[in-house]
Length: 221
Ligand code: SAH
Ligand code: DHB
Ligand code: MG
Figure 1 (cartoon, rainbow, N blue to C red):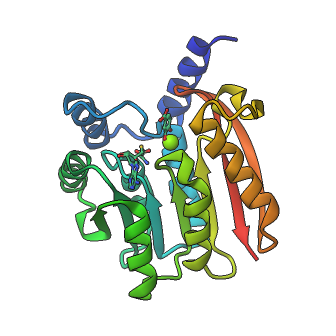
Figure 2: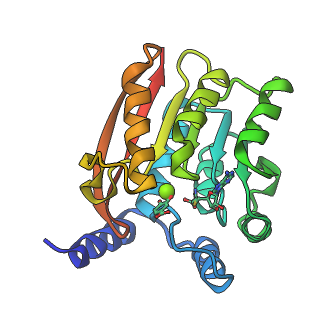
């Protein structure tokens, strides 16, 4: 089975299970038109994030790495009326595109986008006592995964769900030669989760429209 099959099956999942959603299609179109890299979560993954928000009964969600807000919108849709997503983004252009996408999909009132280096925004969230968050999605610069996981612990409570994207990287996660900083970041996520006794986690390998990758998921004890 090839990457073409994986993409076709992703299309099948979406067409069988999801309602047509022109506003969400327009988000991806805007992201490509505005030159953002095509590294948004897939629709099937976005729906999974939305379901995890609902399964957790989350009211407060934290996302590290907004891009054009596609994953943010999926998570916002899983929240109750008084729920909020705080999402952190470094690039002003990405943030601008994301804000217009939040308007387009009617989730602006549920989203607090903070522009700047995530490590600074995370420190600010801790000092303003913004936590604890019920679900935290880590999907930014991969070398900082261990730093983001440490801040995530400080912004968590018992029961917080932490999801970390892109931890398989086509199987390159097995290469420990240190040559690819994204792989180093993926391995660092495994070391962190495996070594932190307050976290109980696993990782799921995925194929689909984004190729072969996967995410780690953990719960705070
Ligand atoms: N979660 C998004 C994809 C995020 S792509 C989605 O699925 O739709 C990763 C994003 O992290 C990019 O927009 C990039 O600009 C941002 N990023 C990279 N380094 C960062 C940093 N130090 N602080 C905050 N955001 C960062
Ligand atoms: C990359 C980053 C992502 O967040 C992703 O989901 C896929 C690829 C990347 O930088 O290569
Ligand atoms: Mg990602």
